[in-house]
Amino acid sequence: MRSLYWLTDEQMDRLRPYFPKSHGKPRVDDRRVLCGIVFVNRNGLRWRDAPREYGPHKTLYNQWKRWGDMGVFLRMMEGLAAEGAEPGTVMIDAAYLKAHRTASSLRVEKGNFGRLIGHTKGGMNTKLHAVTGANGRPLSFFITAGQFSDYTGAAALLYDLPKAKWLLGNRGYDADWFREALQAKGIEPCIPGQKSRLQPVKYDKRRHKRRNRIEIMFGRLKDWRCVATRYDRRPTVFFSAIALAATVILWL
Image (cartoon, rainbow, N blue to C red; front, side, top):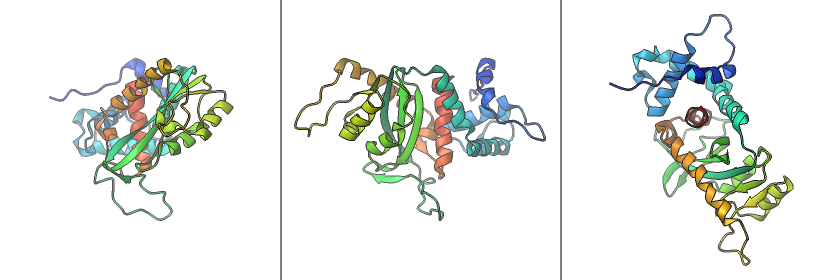
């Protein structure tokens, strides 16, 4: 028998302020529906395969789609991150997430930015860029197609960086413009230099070793099948799944 997932009373109390207000007919049990959404996403199931204990699968899907379009899951993660952020040190990194064939359709609607899925040596995938606190808990995310460089994510996440003293990153973020932008914000970069540099870059090697916490964070996110393998064509839906996984795993 499958072990079902249930949020505790304390966890529900922390999440409830981010729920949208119910207009007209009251919603069904928020705990049951939200736990069903978590169960489906964590195990990478089809909605019709959700256990009966969570109620009708159409109810789960409708609330998942509605709340995702409203940005509820992203607000949950950002709200909890704001409560427990540690501004002293932040870290930046990126990871590849494989795209399933159901997500990598080449048909794109007009006026759309695309699927954010690209061709790399590892196949079809999406790239997840992240900024975390010193404890490895995520503060912000950004997704691109897999072939985009780390600089693209760094530029997108730069202006949302919280006030911090240090930023830890790998060699993929060694660029003069990025270092100058960080110093303009009062953040000291702790980033090793590229091997192609004529003059080596000095950095705190002891402090840089703490960067493994962001790699551990990516590993925990990939424990969710819907994150490790992208099944959704719409980037907004996939982004909601990432935000939900980060909220449940790392902030609750």
